[in-house]
Amino acid sequence: MDIIQKHKIKIIEPENPKGTIMFGNGFGTDQTYWNNITPKFEKDYKIVHYENIGANNAGTEFYSPNKYDNLNTYSRDLINICKHLDLKDIIFVTHSVSGMIGLLASNMDESLFSKIIFIGASPRYLNDDGYTGGFNSPDLENLFETMRANYFAWASGFGPIAMNTPGKPELSDYFVKTLSAIRPDIAISVAKTIFYSDHREDLPK
Image (tube, rainbow, N blue to C red):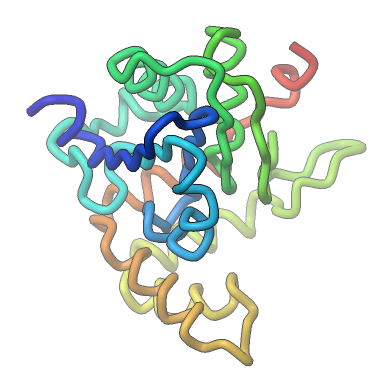
């Protein structure tokens, strides 16, 4: 399987693009997350979408919980994608965990991105002394236990809570659908990698 298929890469390129915009997805979503945004840029920019390994059934045979137990592995995947497509000076628009994936990739190769736009990114999700990440250890253990007990029931309940858009139930339905598209064992493993990550020291680089 080549890298295009492995990461479900999709490219939209107009004549004489002003530059390249690449979109990085958050946990539980896929590239369709950006469907209402990308049309505004397609006439002027080369648009690149991709999936992280394990998301949206992308390259699941290449997923290993040992290999992907840290965000640096996802960052190296991102660098390989950019090199394969010969991309540099990219505007990287990120959501959630893709923000830190992009930051780490930029620390590894400064030529990749001209700008990284962070939407809902966090360098650490666990609370610490003098730092509020939003979760404590019992919170996360309860989360993972609920996911293990019945992943699809968890996704159905978590989607509406996370979206918090009671006036637009279609948004919650969308998130439940994309969460449910992830293989449960992969989803739990990826969630642990994300929620136990700590990249505060990488921010100033």
